[in-house]
Image (cartoon, rainbow, N blue to C red; front, side, top):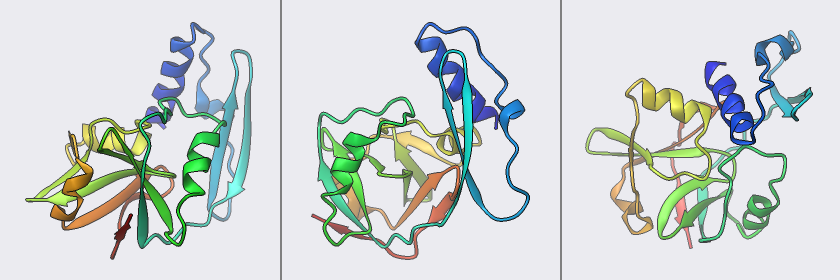
Length: 175
């Protein structure tokens, strides 16, 4: 929760808004089942909805090259990401490559394993809350990851608030 609070505070501050609420005051999830909590906030209001969460099985990622994509602040407008996702063909998800560097999938940050270290892109599209926590805990290091280096890594993990750190059993990269 502290990482979500920090992201919320940072976004409002970047917009010149100083009316920052304590997000925990708005959270009251269902008592049974697994739900994704969606917070939509404006300068004066926070709306909370809950959606049943079903984890996607990912075993293939299509590399999508796009140097113009921006998503540095979590937003309800995911049109650009959805447009890239629609190009996945038979792959389960996409791996966004920007300026020849690995960024994120459509739903998660990414980490790759090599030489005893889990490495996450230094320049993801969105600096996710789970990513921030794992970096702070020393479990991930940040580095530029070139698309051309993908096959030099032995494992891949997806990370976000719902799946935490999910090492994929297998993952095929598709062009």
